[in-house]
Length: 290
Image 1: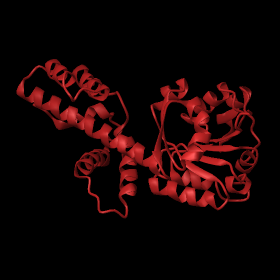
Image 2: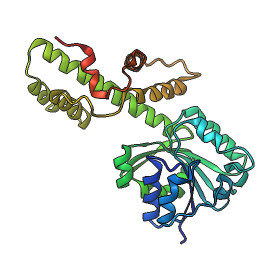
Image 3: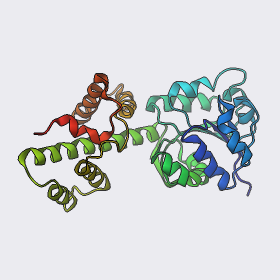
């Protein structure tokens, strides 16, 4: 059975190694980026570059975008040389950027008018996992399309999870980020309390890891605090996008997430104070333990 033909849009820091994983797995790939220099290496490695987003869409069974914002996705869809002008019926569109959940629903409706199925499939793991092909991929959309695209996902990730209908992949990423952010803050507060009282920080970390609170994230954050490694992890600014995506998912509902709001509002206040470039472990230092 012939491999699905892939059209890949967005060959930046994350997109390029993801596209390279697909090439290694034998998928025929056509690439496009606003800056052609960003896909020159991929072309040298076997990808084709038809020249426009429309031309890529015309020769692809699966279209993948890895772009930072929803607006960037929208920008390459419309117009005489956009994706929609060349997309083929019965193909699959996959947005693998982390964007708003409700925008994923909009894309699903938009592509349905072209007889195309849309999936939203944000990732977790960072550049290293993209290079290694070990990303966690969370997918929303029709299960039939998910199953058809599964070999494509498996070429880029070591764990692929079906999360539900359109938008559910983006919601899954938002849920993940809620737990990540609250864990980072809770570990910071626990270790700050320990220091304030004069308890042994290593002992407190060992307690956290010897009970039901044990996790890789708890170990990572507690160890960073003990080592004074304030340059590890994501910038706090990066969590602002998660904050916006969570708010988008809550639009039209009466659901309140008090803990989530408190943590993300704290991160937002830190960013607005001009300290948003601090890394996540630095949340501890901002508690000012004595």
